[in-house]
Amino acid sequence: MYTAIGYAAQTSTAPLAPMTFERRAPRADDVAIEILYCGVCHSDIHQARNEWGFATYPLMPGHEIVGKVTAIGANVSKFKVGDLVGVGCLVDSCRTCEACTADLEQYCVEGPTQTYAGHDRIDGSLTMGGYSSAIVVSDRFVVSIPAKLDLASAAPILCAGITTYSPLKHFGVKAGDKVGVLGMGGLGHMGIKFAKAMGAEVTLFTRSQAKAEEARRQGADHVIVSTDEQQMQAAAGQFDYLLDTIPVQHDLNPYLNTLKFDGVHILVGLIEPINPPVHAVNLVMKRRVLAGSMIGGLAETQEVLDFCAEHDITCDIEMLDIRNINDAFERVIKGDVKYRFVIDMATLKA
Ligand code: NDP
Ligand code: ZN
Image (cartoon, rainbow, N blue to C red; front, side):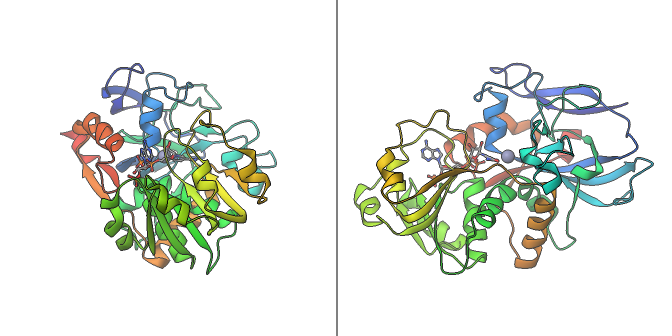
């Protein structure tokens, strides 16, 4: 065991505050990592405040982790001390079910072990995330950061990147398809870049006209202001896919109406329950599909990092001093960040 420090919430109503805790000594298949950067995902806020109802405390968020290997277990051959590596939302899974053996650990039939607020499969201890100085993770759940990528802006690829890349690939987005991205935050702005890199014609649906120019800079071909009923009506029947990153309950019906027949509306937010209700007519009459998607498996997480290196895709980030994390949460909720906070872990030592 060795001592680490980090920022954690002690209850669902407490702000994040510094906490000293123990990380395990590396097991035979473990990689110990000094964390250099960690992205701030909207999920961190949902979880710290128990908005999904399954948080456990103390809760130390952070699942967009980039760092340097400081030690390896006896059986680790994939990594060596000094390597630059990443850890995303998962740190373990059963490894034997049909999902795990198909490289879809995120859908592990037993339930994967989350990077934070989960329970270690061997000793049962509570997992603590990346808002911390160090982490120890089994090598199967560690990925390599391509040398070409800037380390800080690579961090959000571990969640915001893979969560948007995976469904676009899975549902088969290809050149010429019309893809709508709903919401331009951390996930949305990556979704625009990936859909564009896959050759799609991309439209951002946003609440704010002010984001129009920014969206074009991200690669969007068109912008629809979702609060403008006329613009929504004019888009009826146009899209092959919608990638919905809106983090709160919202009416899906006006968006479904913008899909062609056979169009697919992909949810990534846990907007329990969907409210107002979806009208069956919006699905049935056009054979439309309402789908969901969760992050991605480890192989695909490595794939998206390599894809970003190959296509010069980076996340737009604002560097954060960890002492300002509670303000940063408020700013994320207000949409006041372009488009991802990344904690510079050097500020933890200060
Ligand atoms: P952000 O807060 O960075 O972005 C969300 C965007 O949604 C905002 O920028 C805004 O875009 C839009 N939005 C925000 N509030 C509202 C509102 N009240 N009504 C309509 N639109 C709104 O969040 P993230 O990108 O980090 O995360 C998005 C969601 O995805 C979260 O719920 C998160 O938990 C979830 N998530 C899911 C994962 C999965 O595996 N399925 C993994 C990671 C995250 P605009 O201003 O352009 O309208
Ligand atoms: Zn996330």
